[in-house]
Image (cartoon, rainbow, N blue to C red; front, side, top):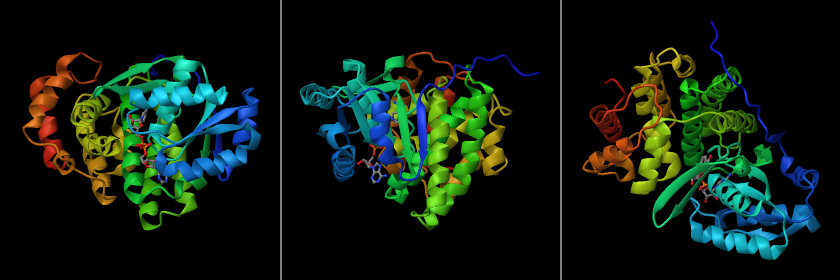
Length: 354
Ligand code: NAD
């Protein structure tokens, strides 16, 4: 029998396609604004300048200083730039770092957000904001953090380097994996996640063969939307907690950390909820969800071990202690011993169960 559920709806408006960045001005006006600040990282400043030119008189300027993990000092500068520009909304063009900066401005000023995501990290559909100050990352959820409009433009993802294409896709798959067993999951999100796995399974190998394959880019970006909607709709558990521990306390790179941990967190929870994680084995093969995702990771050249990103074996005890400090929902109870084993396997990079 189908379990009972609540579907809260998806409140963010989504425009998906090729060349859709040209519709940014219409989307800004639709939200009732006539001045916007365009946000980007320094690396994507040229894209931001092109967008500002397209926006014409709607553009109140560019702030191209977004960096990873939304540090408060950068946010303060961006809020000052936003206020002095006369803008009432932001257009965030870039990956999760730029989206994070737009959210940080929105939550402090009430600005509306139009987001144009260029990676598969999946921040754009969520009400989640992670911020760092003095080396500590804190995360909060609030309705005023969630962007009003997301414009997915396949063309802007053509330049995504192959390495980040792969790890960013694994980051997105992690949202789907935890959505499958989330206590507040619903059938719409589960369907979207299943569709996302199939699309990534098809799209990512094609993008390794040809990063400019537009059909594969569209598959991957569609999958990213589904996974972002999942992240923004339901609770996350052990996997996201561990990624947060390594990113926050060991300063590991965001997408790689998710990519490395995913087979091990999947295998760990598969022991408790094999039926709920069966869609992963269905999508990737391999006999088990954890084994299947590890096989996929290896086949697409995703990093496989924590030691490959600079974690020392001696760090694993500290990571375990931080991860078990506060209780959080997870389908399998978490104890220091089994968590330490999970991290050992992830540090070595061996196939789960091997
Ligand atoms: P990123 O935004 O830091 O981008 C990495 C680099 O790639 C940047 O220099 C960026 O300019 C560049 N880049 C992005 N797209 C490109 C493209 N198409 N072509 C060429 N270069 C491109 O990386 P990310 O993995 O997307 O985001 C990571 C950040 O997002 C972390 O801070 C993470 O905490 C946050 N995040 C937040 C949520 C949420 O819901 N709050 C969800 C996922 C990620």
